[in-house]
Image 1 (cartoon, rainbow, N blue to C red):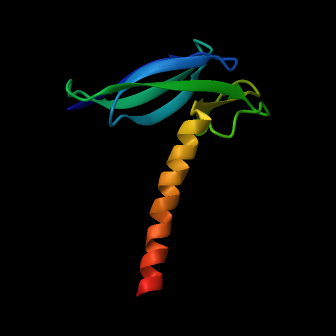
Image 2 (cartoon, helix red, strand yellow):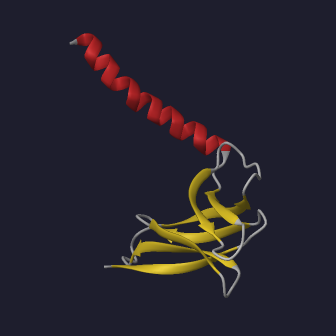
Length: 117
């Protein structure tokens, strides 16, 4: 079984930490006018034996620089104002390099196979 949880995100480049079960999936991001906050809806498995890991998210306005390592999630727009809020998952540079190396190795394997064929 699975369910969807709603999480309020901090604003102004403050980091929000969420403990999420492996296999989670972000399904929606929206600015709620009544609360004047950005919310994230996350689908999570209900199996209690799945590991829980901490994920960090940051909300920034348009034109605000973020580190290259951060991964874009979605944009929430204030329907009654000119503001847009961009949600990023905070990824440390070391994690990004490790995933790039893994991805690079995966991408190289098909080339090697083609060369030997």
